[in-house]
Length: 114
Length: 113
Image (cartoon, rainbow over all chains, first blue to last red; front, side, top):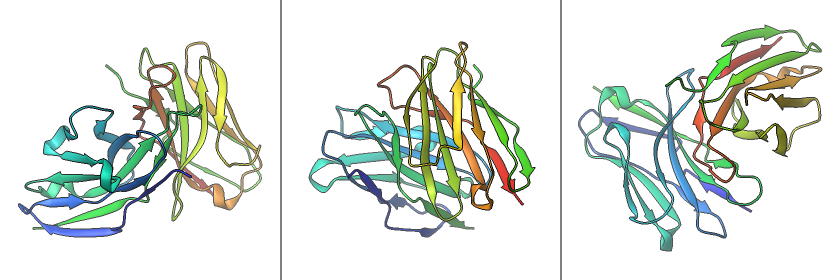
């Protein structure tokens, strides 16, 4: 069965420090991969996506993610975190079967220390 | 360009009542998805509509239903509300079937008391 694992429930980093949020997936075919961010009480905003091609993808707000097929991972990175990055981050796999739905991980809540 | 819009933003209902949530997709998008984000349960797929037809539904009881109109807007109906239906309901749209790049609205916060 398809699944997405985000092993870190919470991560705390200092402002200006680098960030890496982990995501592992289980899917039999070539995945479509996404990272979304959710601020408290808000909807989801798409940060970046991977469909094919270059395994390092750039997104909005200075985020990037790297697809590693051998590790079934799609980790999100940012070189220098800003206080406004504090939010919950969701990794998702887009299914290309007849459902075309997204399977989400459980999310990682990012806290930023001043 | 307007994003996905949902209404209302918040509502409170009593157990046993019925509720209708509304979603307008991004212009040009024909697929609408509904997700439930309940505390502790994460984001769960509810329903997918494309070109006016229900194409797929998640593991939810039949009292969760909906429809998509000719202008591609959508309604989610929940009958016989239960306390555990309290959640943020998120609507997303995408351009055409087979495109899983979905854009989400701000959600409707439903509280059942």
